[in-house]
Amino acid sequence: MKFNAKFVSSLKAIKSLPKESLPEIAIIGRSNVGKSSLINALTDRRDLAKTSSTPGKTQLLNYFEVNGEFFLVDMPGYGYAKAAKTARTDWAKISEEYFLKRKNLVAVAVLIDSRHPGLENDVAVVEWFAEHNIPFFLVLTKIDKIKQTELAQHVKMLKELVFPALGVFKTSSEKHHGVNELRTFMQSLLTPEIIEGLGTHR
Image (cartoon, rainbow, N blue to C red; front, side):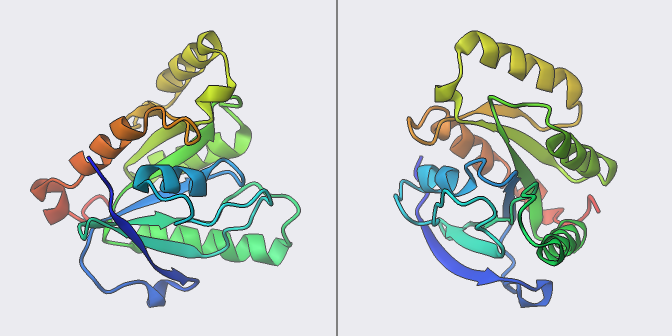
């Protein structure tokens, strides 16, 4: 399965979001967790999403159209302490409004560094999605940088802690581990029943 994707736009206000009725899958995670790298791996594009070694680089909602069927939405990262407080507040407000009001949203991919599961910010974000009945799934990143025994323990821990998650996926954008499995899962979210029910979970 291939994801043929194109960049659509970067937006900073909910009122500016696309009017198209395409489903949306949002991608969120701590700053520098590898959101842009994962988008590039999913789409087999080296520079579709701009990667940076500077945490907090993504400050807008970046829209990518995939196969003419849905949007991947790259959300601002969280947990970057050096960002200005006003900027962090603005990102949080935009993100919260998007998650609570965007009817096109099908599910949220919460990216977690496989080496550091259970961090306070990650747990708080996951709990918030669960409390608001927003469908989400976990994507562990950078699994090529951790021992398999540790990875198995971390996955087991997350599956026990994160009860309402749609799934837990293990990926390496650099090695392309788990990318095809994640593509297949994302595609499975686009069933007619789910698309027809957009927005009914909020």
